[in-house]
Length: 504
Image (cartoon, one colour):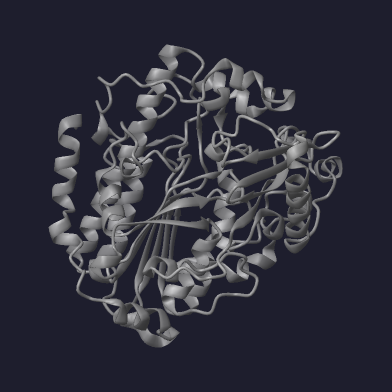
């Protein structure tokens, strides 16, 4: 598909006129749906959840990106609500996806001696389990990638469940052709919707591998970032601008342990030469646009099955992404490029005056399951650590909404095991696998790019003390300090360590 035709052809499948025509429904129906009892059936909204991989918050057209084309996601934002400050509590897909399922941060849902494996006791309250018990038809297609014991079977938590992973990205079909994993996920979604009973609500989770690199194939472009055929040629004539934070001095300013971390080693896989950077950035953006193309097809199926007027659509990602900024690749560490992800919520029942809003309130990946249950009228478990975003989507932010949150990375030692607090102005992180512990303190008001570490600045002595205490408080709240690094990893088999467990 040629780049100049991409937006028009897809938007023809899923147009504003045909799909987003629910402005007159009003808040009364919204409140009724939220308060509906579990037996309520038809009044409860359907939930359609798109989760992509390795996408930070600003790589969407609606977020102002000058190159990436995502017309269908942009349309959801124009008619829905986009969260400007959406974060993950742990920036790695295997843990972030577990946090979304369980509603808990990593140290609360993980087995301490086998991070990031999910503790069996937490699986009783997965959002899919509770929605299924409440009468929802539940489906999951795509990248599962949640570490759980052999005794736990995801098939028991969904009515329909299929892992669709990226090895390889192109899946051979019965007729001998191949289809991209994103397209296969779209195929399964369409089939699911075609069989949806009209008198039963559904929750369909579509979790993509895209836009994760194929790390087993480091050939630039289609080898490393394989894109669906539908977006062939996109961005081919566009010169990719260099990363905004690519000055060598920024990399050189990092502590040695970060300069030697996986954030740096994977930089040489992806971005280290001008030619490789140009090729891989075009391929990476094609993968994002490929998901947008699949999203359009799924939403067209919603309309065809007459399900659109009562289906809430969520679009988010499991972690952010360094695209050469700071001389880094991947995610894992504490900077904004790693922690920030997109979040768009489109609710067709919202009145017209509540649409197209940009929300400043802090949202977290662990808020999503609470939100899903709230929409369904299902009681939110006390073990959930996030909060429902439903009232914010309606335009009513609670007066006691959070002003900071706990974040961590507990499964990639050495060099990237840390815990911290991201507040509205200040960011504090301490890398607990270093000796002595290495601390960062950033002032986003004075240094939005986090180029300065204020830990040793006397003027920030009180701020540092406050952020340390807050981190200690949240560590205790979420289950206490993790085991010492050497003890935690000595209890694992050497084969499982791989310098710190799964690196996805």
